[in-house]
Length: 535
Image (cartoon, rainbow, N blue to C red; front, top):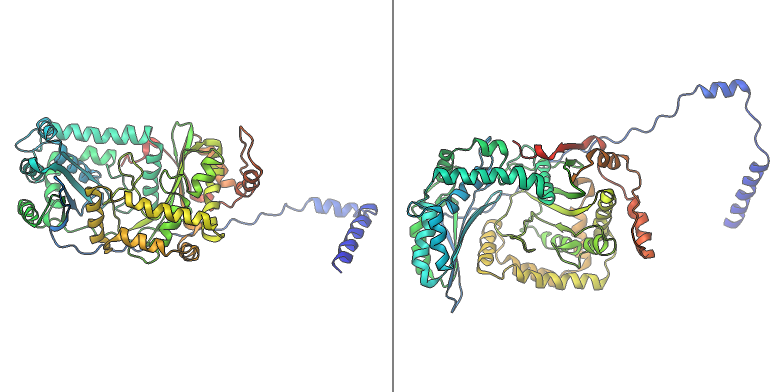
């Protein structure tokens, strides 16, 4: 019957082709010509923001000590973590916590000038530095036991007896301003995109501004502000002490006695409000650059203390850990198509440690986000690469995962997490993070969960949490208007290669080139790079 129906339809088409219908009367033709063109269906309204509740950290008693002794090791690592960061910057003084941290850790003590501090540490082969994030600030050091007494005096003087030298203050503030004006805005498209994503996801929120501050905020900060802020936020009730290596209870008691000279109680901690929960917003930062970099993401309530965290984090690792070749994003976008250096996905806020690939510790947040970094691509390929990311994001949640890929990703991650705890400082960092997240032995529990993981368990969790319509997009590009037009049009974005590609690549390209974009034209904004973090 299906064949008969097909043939009958074909005969009808032939009959229509050989016997055209009679022409309508002239009056009808004229009347039809006057009809207005059909109106296109109105686009759907922009998706509304849905606030994402935060999950407060666990309460940690003042000056809690975390000890990790290592037998026969003559090195002591010390880590003092304060529950304070950029969220404590007063309005109009953005960057105050980071600048205060720099003045204390680099500006000298009452006994030693900045130059003398460096000279004192060098012959001891000792390390001492500080850095600040959104909610945590870390002062860390490392020294041989032979020099421990002298080092402890210097380390605690940095916190208790800072020099507050006006010249050092001006030097460090100028450096912070130059970081925003030059390095952030003009030299580092990837970091600029990540800062832009924070501003997009957290407009009007304490997470909104760059940790290092804004131009207006840094300009307004005075040395007196720094002095007062140190008393407000570097207090015992905000501090956790970590000691590792050649340490014992006696040493812990000694260091705690020294740190007991800090203010007992600081300013009330900032209450982190819900994340705005914006959806489908796009920010294009216009800068004179040859390529286009992307930072995509959404805020969510998923955290390490959620049962779904392990399978979702595994799914993001399967998509691609930082600088790891096995990830689907890396394999498809870089290796097969040569689009860029790499593309990576994260289940929680990620900051790499130094120039390495492993995640930094003590950068926890009460409001978390899922992010994808699209390393710079040729500007003409930015839309295709975005579609590729979205396609692969849907693939990992919805299509069957080959067993060999799953096992490779699992074996890699079980081993890779071992590198996350390879130093005393990192082990202390994770142990302190565990206190705030309420996740004792997080890494060991992660590995246990991975060993029992199945593709079905991973994909079930991903389907619960991944929603492409929640994603927001930030680009750094030169032709911002052209990129906006391409993203708004939703027209296919085919790609051309300078060298031949395999049939499998070309076949998938056809799907990717037309993959739906979740952007909404009314929610695409263009800003000049020189305006980013101005105030």
